Amino acid sequence: MCFYAMTSYKLHYACVSCRLGFKQHANPQREHLCPNCSRPLICAGHDFAPPPRRDVRSWSVVAVVLGEGLRYEGLSACGCDKEPKYRPRTRAELRARRTVADRDGLPLSEALSRPDPLAPSTD
Image 1 (cartoon, one colour):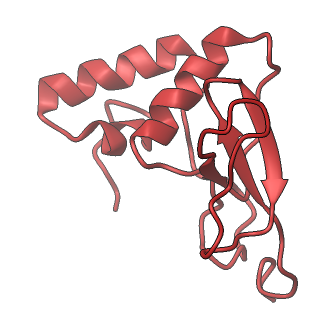
Image 2 (image 1 turned 180 degrees about the vertical axis):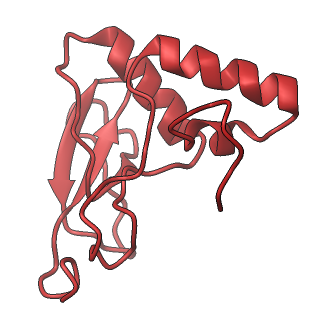
């Protein structure tokens, strides 16, 4: 049975400049704005767990991941697989993936989605 198909779950939205996360219903007609700075929120997906606001280093990694157009989602769009896809959590993991992307000529978004930066893509 599809996990996300049974109910309309709220999506996580993030404001990287304020280091805040919100859960709101997806509405394509409405622009989601940050209540603090009035900038548009970035859709972070169903499985985003925002780091604490004081953790500036983790938010810098989140900013790069979301800036590359990646979202924190499960293995399938419908939610049948509840294991989330890999996303780097520390600056060391981000640095390793940037190095591999530069060395191999990969797009950064592809390198960020690999659990092991040196393993070839299975997609």
